Amino acid sequence: MASQGRYKDALALIKKQNPFPAVCGAVCNRRCEDACTRGKIDEALSIDAVKRFIAKQDLNADTRYIPPVVIPASIHMDHFAEKIAIIGGGPAGLTAAFYLAQTGYRPTVFEKNEHPGGMLRYGIPSYKLEKDVLDAEIDVAKEMGVEIKTGIEVGKDVTIQQLREQGYQAFYIAIGCSAGSLPDIKNINSQGVMTAIDYLHESNCGNIPFDGKVVVVGGGNVAIDASRVSSRNKASQVQQFCLEQEVDMPASNEEIAEAREDGVTIHCGWGPQEIIETNGKVSAIVFKKCVSVFNDEGKFAPVYDENTTVTVDCERVIFAIGQRSVWGDLLKGEDVKFNGPAIELNKVTFQSSVEDIFAGGDVYTGPKFAIDAIAQGKIAAESLHRYVHHGHMETGRNRWEFKPLDTDDILVESYD
Figure 1 (cartoon, helix red, strand yellow):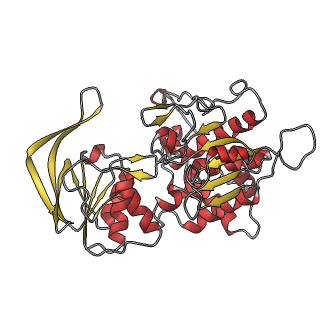
Figure 2 (cartoon, one colour; figure 1 turned 180 degrees about the vertical axis):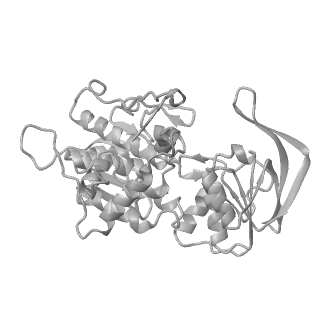
């Protein structure tokens, strides 16, 4: 469709699966292109770039494409009356709300922050994803009938039971992993130590200009984001330390290369040993040599050479070594089952042990990519629709299970 210039038709097709193509065009990790069999011949189709181009046409258009509401009912009505609450306005929650609206509901999103978007707004730096692009795609959901209430934390400002009393019949928890983790090392509470999640949140809110020396700990994309934002915030020096060797770093090669272009120095094979503080403030961090990261069974079990250390002077240390969900009192009084820190859900429907409570996105999977949360939000919308209409929860639905081709066993003798 794009090759034929049918941009609106192409956008309509994309939005059947993804309400945020402009967002994903900016931040997606393009696993579809990695799997594209055309890559065995020359290079993969530029799926991400094509979608980004199509979405951009829509952002620039005088009249936006608003997907039509199609109500699956034999009687004429303008919308379903059943009230559904979405708790968390990140990619999973907003996607569920979008597809519920397209099905004929008027769902309500409760978001504790000042603006919706979750990690898309508060975790991803603006040089990757401009906030007006995010707002433009969220505006389409509002046009379709999604109500977004910001500054409301469910469990604190209002409880799930109180929402039931207001007539809400189903709940989708999509609160993500909004807190970072800190290691258990000496002086970890010194002034100047923070998590990458908090650092990126503050930076996206326009805070934390800084011109001193920064050390970032971690080897993933979030760590790279923190390093690059620090460099762009005029830090005099940014050094990043991670356990892995560069070939094993979780961050993408593209991200690592771009960090270096922004002036970040990356040191591989080191783990934090202790923070050194002066008058309550960070003055340096000590690292110990990491000999191996995983054991023979492939489990995370780092081994260190405690005698080989390096001390790095700095005024700020940012840890990007893990994320967790912040539940607060959200489920107080609700008999929802957990397996350790993870909520237990039906793998097909995403329904919890309390029948009107569903969940999905990072709060269920742990930190993943925006596209994974979007995929779960769409499946949840179908489950929520079935639940409030007392339908079969598992029968007759697309389970989105795919078995990949063995791409090493493909013979292409000629192609067009």
